[in-house]
Length: 167
Image 1 (spheres, helix red, strand yellow):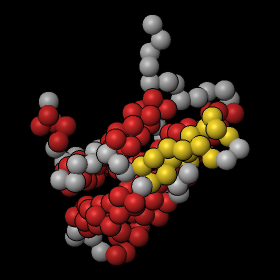
Image 2: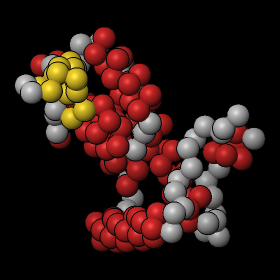
Image 3: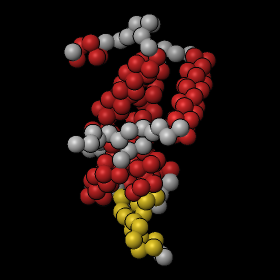
Image 4: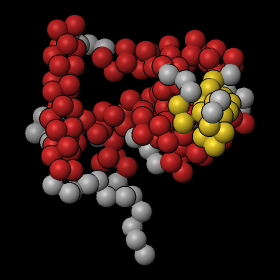
């Protein structure tokens, strides 16, 4: 089964499947590189968001990452234990905890971002700049189309189901 899953699809394969396999490949390639820095891919997701915008709440981080709050909570606990971030209340609202990077969490950016750049370079090897730009534009259109589809479904009362199956 693993051989079938890891095979390179042919040109007749559905685009959604090819994109899923490419995403899996990008993620695994980055995971391999992150492991030497003792950072998981899940932790990377939150570090990347926090490098762009600190002070978000756990809920805001979960939404930004597209993950559940329990998953976010677990990842943030681990990042806090590693000394990469801290949670603190802001003046005027002691109940809500906001997430901020520590000095070490900020410094990690210099170490980890080049790894993501390297993965992109590996993945795009052999493509011309024009081909890369065509792929980029096409993927952005695909994302816009799928976001619009989800928006319309939401207006009709159809939403993405929870990952847990009710018992």
